[in-house]
Image (cartoon, rainbow, N blue to C red; front, side, top):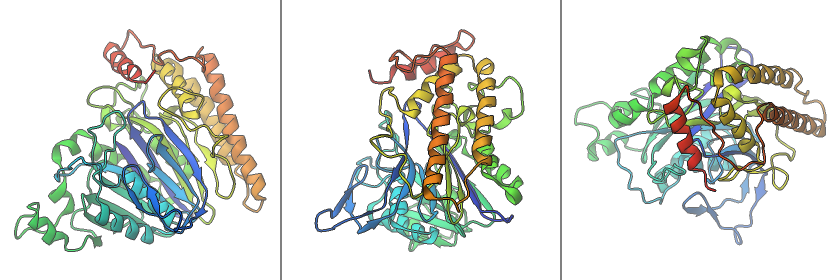
Length: 448
């Protein structure tokens, strides 16, 4: 489950984009820089995506992405031109054959970032690839039965679109002011773009009754899974909060929205076992809330975009770090991409801290959050002027990354957590026995 929002106008500032990626709790998410490349198509004519091969192109743009470590595609990302995209799982009535012979929503997202330079072109590419290859592709990690269709927010410096799909059917509308999406279809009759012969195709397939008007969400939504995802509450929450701040939206405000715990915001005694699927900062807590926010992104989209990634789970405990285009951090071999088991990556070191805090969240979280806020404020308030050299900007990004790592290691030391240990990450709490049982179950699924 995920949540994405964008604020495009209403103030004098740049476009602000935010997304939480909610995945399986053990599914480490990698933030990564992929440089621009030119390809000799006589030698490299094909590209292997997550499941299938498609034709390669002559040139791909530099991208900054956050992706599940085992996938080719990305949950969210930005390219050097400021094109920014986030995707969501949506649940429709159209059955999926589960042959893994299509593109994941994450593949479509990354392909658009690599191959296009504005929102309109990205919309055209994603829908063309969707119609050609479909999206029969497992989106799960250890859950190999998790298949879904996708929706997207696609934004650049001047325009943004909401794109929603059901198999090879799709509709899109341009964003006016602000928009948000979650894990359900939202576009009804008010679409401005659609797949060819949408209504006729839906009638022929038996989804649109004769004489009825095409209302995309009503025609294609699977009501049970859409309701179980809690998407309507979360989508309304992110939409309302983004709207309230639309006149003066900032990256810091966007980060605050992504940390929202829904009905528990501003209340004492919050525990991550409580909000279920009504929390934008999603905490896995049981069978009805099995997903966890495993990575978050905020982007200030202007002539020189500033990209803020956590690279870690639980934004309420995470630090957003700034990244820029035109230099070389977040690349192997210096940058450790997380794997299936706890390692020395940023994601897994933070996960050691995260699961230690879960044992007594109300006692341990406030100090971590106060230290995080102070450091994050420093990062934001001291952003370099682009009139400085590329080297100065790179040094600033690296300094922020190193400072956040240092703080994380200090937190592990205070919590008496050994970062080199391969023991189970979650100790549990007698005060929350069912919650403890649930998280110990996830610990048990980590490969040894």
